[in-house]
Image: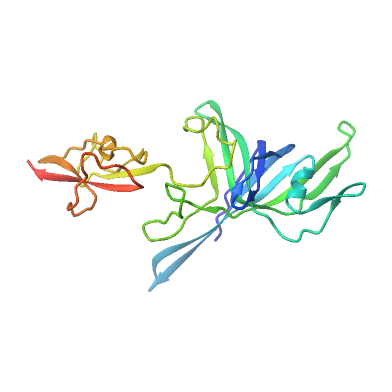
Length: 277
């Protein structure tokens, strides 16, 4: 059964950007947007054998949704290939193809009683021709509403350097549909000025404690590092009863030690090396 996760919220400061020869242009304001709804396009298939659940296969196609505006953005319509300037005004023309682009928006949320603005970029966005509705009332003479159907296809996540596709431990590429920034994130102030590259942060380091613990916690320690920094500068100091920590290794077998000046080069997993004390 498909999982229906619908999120609807007021939206502000909407922008869009199209790419030319693989490079995104400066974002352009898309005014008059008043709501955005996103729904996960996601299914799961459960595999059984001899009456036993063997596996669950995920089918994640991205997101779909609706963007509502109260005034048709002529420049956006032309950029999407749905309109063109004709003699006397704007022509609503046959759309021959769809153009993927990036879409930026901000939304206010309340967290622990504190209001904050979250900034977002959606990737691989396709908008269809908008539906139109008009309403005539006594108090408000004309209310126009345009509903754009959205499909968010995403973009392939890049590696740390942004030079190649990221692949997981099984060799799979990974799609990224949205990148969000909160006020505590490093690049929050400038996030939205340009379309970011969807890539891993500088580097995530996973420290496998190999039976040790940090303040009683035995889970792996995951920290964000920077390519070029010394690995051991980010290392925790675990303890284990009856053992002494002698260092860290690149492999679980403990055959390749991390040197005192070894640098972070990518996403890495390091393993604690113990000897009996």
